[in-house]
Image 1: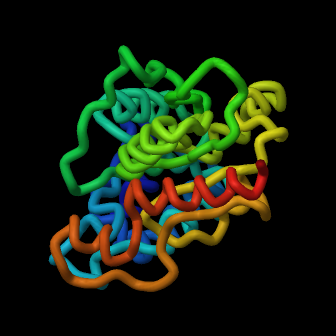
Image 2 (image 1 turned 135 degrees about the vertical axis):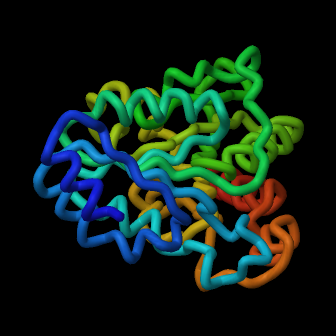
Length: 256
């Protein structure tokens, strides 16, 4: 499938796309790598992006796959949090003519983010953006999430704000797009003065130290998944708003 799409892109006249479970991106890695190497426009649509696959079991639950794709040079990976971010992600994929784009979607139903309270989804175009903040002052704590875990980050942010902690929630659907931004913008979103940072993503945690630093924490997976309903799995693996809040609370105590 991936090889055929690459051939269609080289032929021209169309923008080819493929679609499958994220766990099966392993089988598509050689053609994806070649598409990135040749700088051709192919859109890879991946669904069922985490342990949220639930009863399909660990064979169908991707763990290391997001990081695998992020490691491919010239591959743009975008994991949108809701319908509004998905619109922006598709727009970016159509505009990216110098390499492939992977759009990574969840299986489970996700609420549409209230943009009257949170920042506009246009921030996706810059890879990461300040989605919500408890106040106008510089935050004590930054929570960073992608995809379906943004809902957990927002929930944790509200818990901590109610406790009097100044917290910012950053949506980071694309590492690659964020790294293309100038230093001033990256500093604006993730100020270096704020060392208390927690990431949350339902995948392997390796790599997130790039953004949370050695003093930060990452909520995610350390092993393979299991077969159970989605809600039970998130509880079992401790990927919850409460877990994110506890990690953030501990970091703020240390900084204070």
